[in-house]
Length: 98
Length: 394
Image 1 (tube, each protein chain N blue to C red):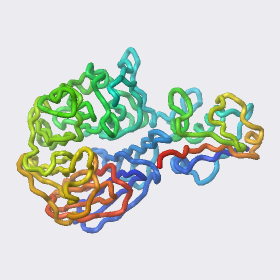
Image 2: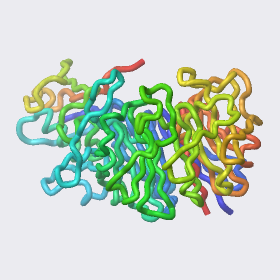
Image 3: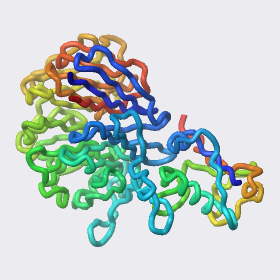
Image 4: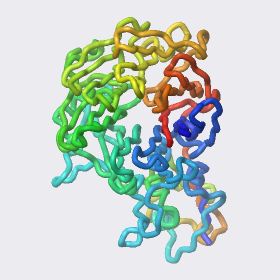
């Protein structure tokens, strides 16, 4: 089972108190993972990626296994530890402002 | 017995304040959407239990929320399963989608506007500043957005479409952002003429359509702004707010960056009515529910000092449609007060006597149940207040 941790503001929006759990087949990528999150919680459309271009929003970051994956290709395979649920895929609101 | 509901948008969530018609004891619910900026909430005049809210974040973008029970529960519009998925099985999530109409059939090219440094800058959607439900249909609602444009939804907020004729007005390249951004913040619907809509943009000015939004024209004649290259320009004025009494839709009152203005010909011409105000800089302006010549403003010291003159929070009321103003101070702090009152943060109810409400950047929401003669804080310690809307309920 794939585990996704949303930032608090998006958990509020999706009425979630815990991680998102996903069951996905095939190669796991940022794109397939985010597509699945949005399919399960459509109110999140546009909050992580631009509605039209599907490009990551500037102040949203993606982390997993201690690495910043924000600048990886959305179609690059995610680490096995994310695909098998050993590690969560973390979506984080960038620390910005004061 | 009638009751009143006050919808308060703040920097960190929404609050709903309710009272019976006496307006002495208030219940406060919230924060709804905790942690999010709520730029504006407004109920449908046709169905007051239906409320639209603009929820926004620099991190996560724009969300539209809708309540069907007077603000107790909320959902993004279109949460029925059949609304959620497109034919390809992917989620539509259209209720959050504001895309400028650049199509050859109905849209206008996505051109540029003037940037802070005088160069041209492309239009970029940032957020919804103001939601204005239709006077006739609870599923029809307008949204004023930054960068300035007007959108509408005719399906209860599930999907949004731009009225591109406004942005396509040939003055667009001269529009410029104010300090808060290039926002469309005022939408006035004419109760006598459903084809007529007046809007205002900081810093472009006021515009009007007489054909339901297809074509627009600037209505800024008589405005004088010393801070722009041509003080009498057709566009470029920083209009902060316009108000209208529904019984006299041809009379408009404007709080401009500096100057309080009045028009008696639907904006075709304006004249100044600042009169004896201690400062004619400010943000909100509103009209008494039963007296079309009674108007309210909150003077602010200057464009660089966004707080009341002399640290005294005073609402000013004119019973003559401007020029002659009286300070309303009872119950308001008269020393060491350095809050601001933002453009969408004042509203009136329709009870008699008229209730007047406003919120401050210090988190207070003040109410007067006697048309401004005396004031009392309903709440004092909310996050900075962005908007206040009063609903009068049967």
